[in-house]
Amino acid sequence: QRILILVLAATSEVHSFTGVGSQKFASLSRGCSERLASTADVNIELNPLVASVKISKTVEVFSLVKEMEAAGDIVTSLCVGEPDFPPPKAVLNAAMDAIQNGATRYTAVTGTADLRNAISDDLKNRKGVYYPPTDIVVGNGAKQCVYQGVLATCGPGDEVLIPAPFWPSYPEMVALAGATPVIMNTKKEDGYLVTPEALESALTEKTKLIIFCNPSNPTGGVHSMQRLQEIAQVLEKYPKCLVLADEIYERLVYEGTCESFASVPGMYDRTMTVNGFSKSHAMTGMRLGYLAAPTKLSKACTTIQSQLTSCAGSISQAAGVAALTQVSEEEMKQNVEIMRGKRNFVLSELATMEGVTLDSPPSGAFYVLPDL
Image (cartoon, rainbow, N blue to C red; front, side, top):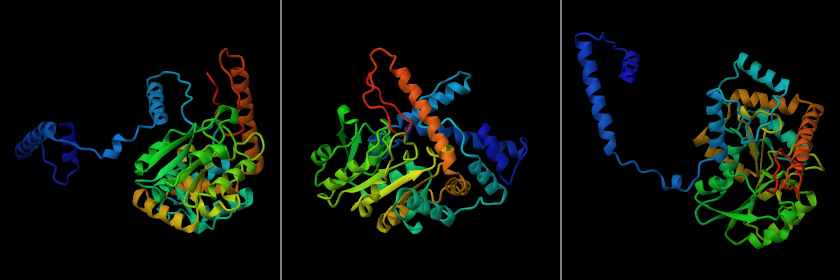
């Protein structure tokens, strides 16, 4: 009845609850009750794909955290990959300016020209790989970009290679695309990094894509340029195998450097590079990421996104431009040093725990994978 009252109040013809109005309300109430009763007989059949996909455990635990906090509980949450410092002031100011200046309309599906130009320049200057702005697709977080990359390239009969340990969403995205996830185990003694030998033994003629997360979630391992070149030599034997390089953590590296897989000789034409702003600039709630790929792949992802979400938020995009053009390298390095201190603290505490070992301390990201 409360719902009906709201519906009636929203119509252009509002009657008092006396006379004719009350009769109409009673009639509506009876009709609603009859419809509610009949729903018990409805046979709702879901898409079979739903049964093949598991709910994100990260999101599930995070929802529980929020419920507990709403109930007044004090919760220390370790479930979501999220920096605990705020975005840079330049990012926040740009978002506020965008709101006040009216930048609240739809943008092009692939993102504003300003943001795509900034991304193109950043990849060229920092990572040594050039994508023209027209080959960059800005999405609502890197997660969307990963899924669209999978959806654009893989389908029934295709296999997608996922090195383990892995981010739990990877195989579920593959299943949603109708393809088959194939888990490739890595070894503790190798630092849970992909080796050319393990890759060679896992690849088949059905392998359409490998999802390569570097730095790794959840180990924090970073593959060196030499290792990337060794991986590339194996992939050269499989010309149909594409690479989705998830490099969302590449700004958070504590030893050495993290090179872009697309910069490895011979790999550019088969690589989709995914990155974003959530981890590097603490912009998790702004939901802003991007995919950069050769034209045929980027156009396919654009087509998919045009029918799913259209553009990313205009305000977030304005903040993204500021992140790449106004935040200094010095400020970014300071954030890395803060995270390095946190990493070292966690490692020192784990070292005091009986029965806990850590053979491969993380060189990047903000995860640690101890052996229990």
